[in-house]
Image (cartoon, rainbow, N blue to C red; front, top):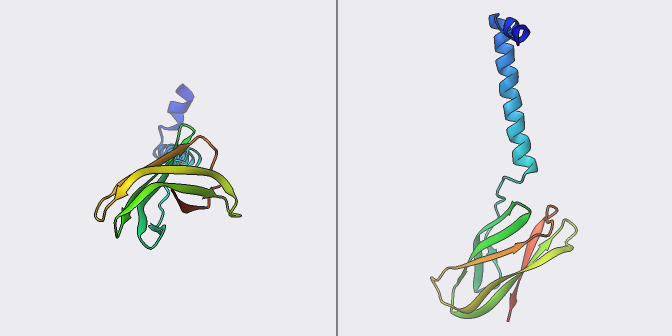
Length: 134
């Protein structure tokens, strides 16, 4: 400890030590953000049909569980059982299929929250396709 203290006594060495410390903290934050999936990927709104749109789409992975959330709206009243969410890799191969349950008649200006989760590894996710379930 004395050796370290003698090194940082000079102004120039102190600047180097502080600079390296800040760089290490920034690097650790970047690694945590990248590896631990701390980002929340953003997705564009999707028209499932001419009548049904899903917006405010988020896919988040925490503690090994990936959760899809979105907001479903319709232009005209429609009874919807659920939405099949096909999670695709870069080759358009299905990694996993999730079902977002609705189970009721949806009317215009009504927002339905869709939520579906999986413990499958979808780190290779490239796209999502949607199908109505009836």
